[in-house]
Each structure stands twice: as structure tokens, then as C-alpha cells.
Image (cartoon, rainbow, N blue to C red; front, side, top):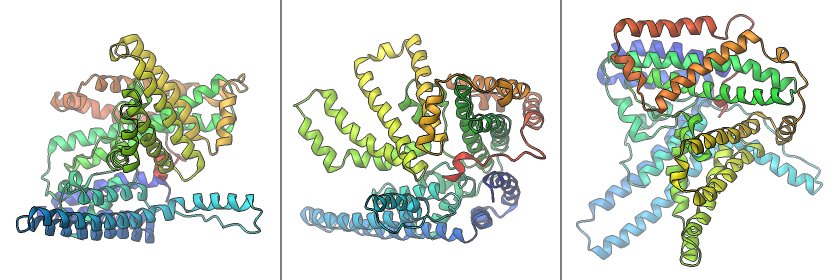
Length: 515
């Protein structure tokens, strides 16, 4: 099934499940979510659903083993002497660490086996080619299970949190499975935290009219971004890259792709969050007006927030506190300036994070370079920020300049993200500086382009007001009923009239749906 069909079924299926959920016995409503989630996963992925069941089972068992050992240790604290308890704690933590590592290897092994096996095969084949070997490892065409990149990271986070004693391990496999397979999050996330999501999934929510109204509006807004803007700009982007356009037209195409990707990804996340809110389930925010960022670092704090938060909690902190990094800090202490004491360790930590971030986006050298591209920019930003005072950065002119500079670097990154290979990336990068070879009308239908620009302006006015901390959703809920109906009906008609769909049109698969 195509990813855009998955999106359609998500909304239709989610609406039907919502009606059943609200009339079912309150105590067992979570079972409706579980059955619906497993049913949808099986409908889309068939036997690949076993991978989800296995991932949940792995983290459930290992978290349970670790949690039980922690509980036994806690129970003996009062009965043992301080020395004996300290020794027992050391032994328990040593075994728990081994259990954690094994659990992570098994869980991430599922993701690596499906998503990265061909990446490693291609590297190995290249090595064999260098040595003039007579054979090559075959490259397999593997269908990724639905949502595997998202639920694998969520489950790994759960296991690490239990190891850290952040909360107790669940004694019920059904709870872990429900957290793993909650169906709105499977297509494009967000990546969830167990202690934030599961209590909401298990709670027998009553019907909340405000949640239903706000959730429905968020869904409509997500549909607007996806169908009216993203799918319209996808037509422009496809034409530009297929026709090998050069010069200013190519620059315009890159900007169009950035808009397409943002409106598509954030639009789908809006639909997921809106649908969940109708169940009275609050999902973590995944976007926070990223195009108003004054640095690339800030951009990535506002873009795909749940992924950045996962790497912060489960990679950044452990690597920062690892023995090699701490040893480097001690070695630099007092021998270099205060800035360099933190700069060099930060470079190591950021290198690890952005290498992994790049590879999370795709199993190829191109995506690794994509991650390292942002790593290099962030390192340069660290150096520049050291020499520019905070007061200077806060000046309006400087801030606006930095916003445009950030957009420049982000759009360069978007070329790399869009191109199939590094060779294509350098090809398109060179084409930017060549004269235009295609007429505007060949790529863009004037009417469609004007509609798209008007819609984008409206979107950025909305985002700008939110950036200024104006809670438009709250204002909507507190506005007169006539105005609320007008807004909803207006959005519906905008989607129906200006949406890109219908006979002969094949919408593109969501770009982040393959991750």
C-alpha cells in the first residue's frame, strides 16, 4: 500500500475507531486502541507486524529483568550495611548494564536488519571491488515494516529510562505493546516517551467537547498544509528536477521543495496530533515555527523536535558523560581557554549525534554526509557565537540577517536531502550558478503558482503569530460559535476548492513516511 493511501486510511480508520472508542465501556477503552492499532498495522504490513510484536516483547522482558533487580536492590537497602549495600549495588548495576546493552542490540538489530543491511552490503562490496574479488554480496529489496524507525526509538528510550530508574518497568506486556503500536504515530511519528504517552492511552477518557473541536481544527489545518500547499508544490518540484532546470529557476525549485517538505511533514503530524487530541491524548510537539530560527542549531531544535529530544536524552548525555569525553575534559582543564575546554568535547559529541541523525534519515552515504553537513555548520556557529556577544545577536538587524542566513544553509541541505546521490547534489549545486535554460511557464502554471504563494503567505502569517506567543487555538475555542463555524467551513472549502487531488492526479508518497 502506498504511503498516501496509508494517510487516507489513517483518517477514515481513526474516525471510525473514535466513534467505537467513545461508546465502549470506559474501563477497557484502551483495548479498542490496541486492537485498532494491531489491525491497521496488519492491514498495511501483513506479517511484518511480527517485527513490532517482537520489538515490544524484547524491551518488555529486558526492562522487566532490570526493573526486578532494581526493586530487589531497593528492598535490601535497609537490611545491609552501607559497605555491603554499595558492593551489591555495584554488582546489580554491572549486570543491569549488560542486560541493557543486550536489549538495545536486539531491539535496534531489527531496525538495522531491515533498514541498513543493504547499506553495509554496499560498503562491503566496495571493499571487495578494491581487492578485485570475484564475487559480490547481493543487494536485497526489503520492504520496511510500518513505523519501524519511530517505534524502535520509542521502545529503546523506554528500556533506557527503566535502566536509569526514571520509572518502574511495566509488568504487563499489553501496556508496552499498546505504547509501541499506537496507530496514529506509526506513519511519521512523533517519537514518544513511555511515561508521557502510556498513562494517557490507559486512561478511560470521557468525551471532551473542547478537545474534539480543537482536534478537528488541527486536523483540518494539517490537511490544508498537506493537500493545498505540499501537494501543489510537489508538482513544481517534480517538474524542476525532471527538466534539469538551472539558474534562478532551480533556486526557486529548492525553495519550493523546502516548503513542500515542511508542509507535508508538519501537516501529517498535525493530523496525528489532532486525531489524538480528539481522544484527549496529548502528543508531544514536533514542530515549533522552525523558519523563524536565527541559527541552524535553533532550526533543528524547532524541526522534528521529538527526534532531537530523543538524541539529546539517549545519545548526547551518555556520550557527554562517557569516559573518553570526560578524560578529554580533564586533560584540557587549565591548559586551554574555558571556551576550548568545552568546544573540543562538544565537537566529539556533536559528531556522534549528527552522524547518527544522518543515518537515521536513510541508509546511504548521502544521508551520512547530510548529517555531517549540519554538524560542520553547528561547529562553525559555536566558534562565531563565542566572538559575538549575546546583546549583538539580539539586535533586530542582526537577528533578521541570521534568520536569512539560516534559511540559506537549510536550503542547501534540502538539495542534498532531495537528490538521490552525492553526484546529483554537486550537479544541482553547480547548476545554480548557470543561466536559466527553461521558461517559467514550462515548470509552473501561473494560476497554480499564485494560489500556492498566497497560501504560503497565509501559513507564515499564522506561524508568525504563534511565534509571537499568540495562542490562536485558544482564541478559536473562546470565540463566538458563529466565528468558529465560519473558520471550519472556510478551511473545508479551501481544501475542497484549492486542494490538489482528483482523477488523474497521483499524490506523492509522504517523504518522511519511508523512515
